[in-house]
Image (cartoon, one colour):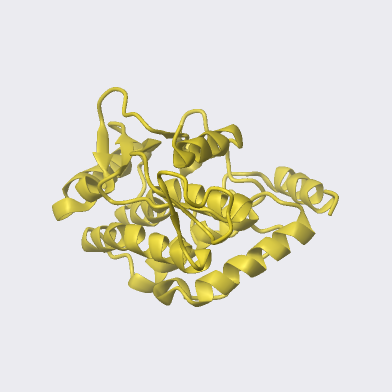
Amino acid sequence: MLPANALLERYNAADGYPPAATTRDGDGWYTLRELHSDGGVLAAQMRAFVASSGCPAQTAATHMAGWVTGSFIRLLVFAYREERRLPLLTADGTALRVDPDGWFDALSVDAPALAVLPGDPLAGTPGVVVRPAMEAELVGSVLALSTPVIDTLRGVSRLGRRTAWALVADTVMSAFAGELPPAPAHAAAAEADRLLAGGGPLAVRRRWIGPVPLASACCLAYKRPGLEHCERVCPTLDDETRREQITTWLRQPT
C-alpha cells in the first residue's frame, strides 16, 4: 500500500469527514478542476442548494466556501497535525461526489505523493518526497486548491473576497482546534494562527477561540439528513440546550 493511502485509512479511522477514498464508486464525481471549470458544476450545485434549503444565494455561497474547501482542508490538517506529513493533493486528482440537492458528501484522492520532512522514516520510500518545511507545503496546498473555488463562488454571488477567505481561514482553524478541550484548543489555534499569518489572503482577521466554534456564518449543515447541529452556536438551538453544551465543553479535562 502506498504511504499516502495508508494515511487516508488513518484519517477515516479518526472519523475524518467526508471520508477519503481512493476509488470513485457510482456517479456524480467531479474533480476539483471540473467543479470550477467555467463555473459550471459548482454554480449549478449552488443553485440546487438554494432550491433545496430555501436559503438566499449569498448564504449558499458562504456555506459552500467552507463546505467545499473543508472537504480537503480537514484531510490536509489531519496529516500535518498528527504526523507532520502531507498528501500532495492536486485539482485533477482530488474529486468530490455531488448529489441533486447541492451537497458534497464524499472525497476521492488519486494516489497522491506523500510529503515528509528530512529524517522521516518514510523518506526514500516509493511515493514519498522530502520537503524542508511542512508549514509552507500546507499553506501552499490550501491556497492552490481553495483559490479557484473562491473565485467561482464570488463570480456567482455577492460574496466578498475578504469574507470568502475568512471562511476558508475559519475552516483551517476549526480543523486544528476542532472539539478539543479548552487548553489544547488554545494551543492548536495558536499554531493555526502562526500558519495563517503567512498565508496571504488567509491572514484576514482575528478569530474567536473558546466555547464559540470558529465560524463566520451558519454552515447550514444541520439541514443535511443525518448530520447534526453545530455544537453550542447553531442558531436553531434553544437557549437551554446551548447553555448545557457550553457547560459540558468547559468541564472537559484539560
